[in-house]
Image (cartoon, rainbow, N blue to C red; front, side, top):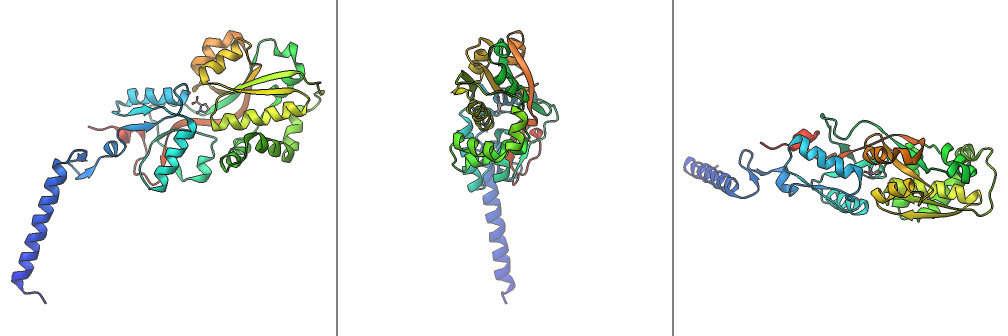
Length: 301
Ligand code: PBE
């Protein structure tokens, strides 16, 4: 047993150490003086990991920074860079906030949560619509019919996205999905006659959702006899292309919120064929192990 004198000495040293540690952490930059820990904002370098600058979700994230009075900056990069940063952070159990959306393979790979958005900046559930150029119906009625019929579930799209994420070539994964889902595809092509090598162009942005959908519908049109070209562009140019008939159609219109500004601008110059998918959403997404639930938790005093 320790005698009293030693006990006292040890207690005093621990107390002194605690004061010393508290003093240091209080003084050190980037630490929250109240808790003695580095604040979340500091750990994240006040950065929200965004995707391409043209994406609606990036614009909404910038609006959220304004609306909630956050000190954060939305860093733009690409969808692929965002998912890489997310994967790196999760491997190290580090905090990260990304601009995200569903359907997406990231939800089957990682345990994630949307941050609540009490101000509704990111909107409610979204549809993904198919938009044709004016005149497509008259010029290519068969393709128009298939595009108009195209409709699938979030789980269908996710099947394709997961395979691509696991390393499959988008074209090959789409080929396989179409072959394995003839029950669904035959509903889109029912009563539509084959064509003889007419050229058709579909524009899309390199978001995982749109890589999946555009390759699938492109494969279906190819099977019908079309000579299909898929053209990858940025979001703004994609809308301009369909409005100016530089492309024949897109299956990538997130409405009413995410691409609402583009839609309003070009409404008179496009043919909206309605949803090809319902129940999509966008928002700020974090790993489930993070101790925050709402965008409001990012507000600092
Ligand atoms: N997204 C995927 C797009 C629409 C499809 C959510 C990244 C956007 O934010 O514009």
